[in-house]
Image 1: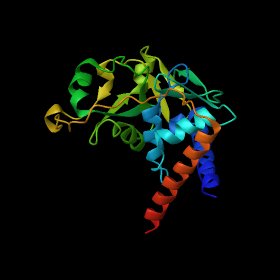
Image 2 (image 1 turned 90 degrees about the vertical axis):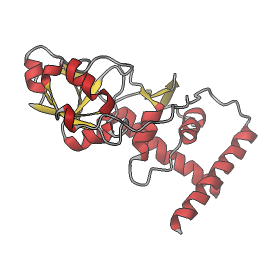
Image 3 (image 1 turned 90 degrees about the horizontal axis):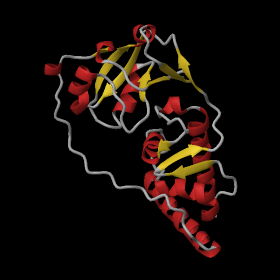
Length: 232
C-alpha cells in the first residue's frame, strides 16, 4: 500500500511539473531559456512555494525522470525541461505601460546605474503585477527592492520584449533610464549572507529492479512519517 501511495505521489508531482514546464511557467514566475530549460533548484523552489507542495524534493523529481515509463522531462547540467512544451515565446512590440521587477538589494545600486545586463540567466523577468514580481525576487533576497520599468516607452524606443503567456515579459537587457526605484538612501543594501549552494547531481542512478523497489518502499515510508507528523 505504501509503495502505491508513493507512486501516486510521484504521479501528482509529475502532473504539476508538466503544467509548469510545458504550459504555464509564467504563473510560477519561472524563466526558461531558449531551449526550454530551467534550473532544477528554481523549479523545486517554485513548487515548494505552493500550498501543500512544500514536501517535494530533488529525489522525487529524479525518480520521475529516471524511472517513469513515459519520458516527459529531460535533465541536463542541473537544468530540466519538458520534452514537448506547449507554450510559445514571441517578441512583443506593445507591452504594458509599466512592468515590475524585484531586485536583490546588493545589486540594486549597479542596476540603477547600468540597468539590466546579461547574466547566467538568458532573460530577465518582468511581471505584470507587483505580487508576482515580489515572489520571484524573494527567491534571491528576502527583502528585494521593487522597481517599475517603463516598458511601453522602452519598446517604442527599440528595446525588444518577449511575451511569455499573460503574466511575464522577458528582456535580455535594458538601460537604466527606463527603471524607476526608490532612492538609494532609503534602501538597506547589506543583505543577509547565504551559504554557498551545493551542486545537484543529475547523473542517472544505476539500479536493479530489486533495488528500485526497495528505494520506492523507503521513500514511501519517509513520506508516510512526514504526513503523520503533519496531522499531529
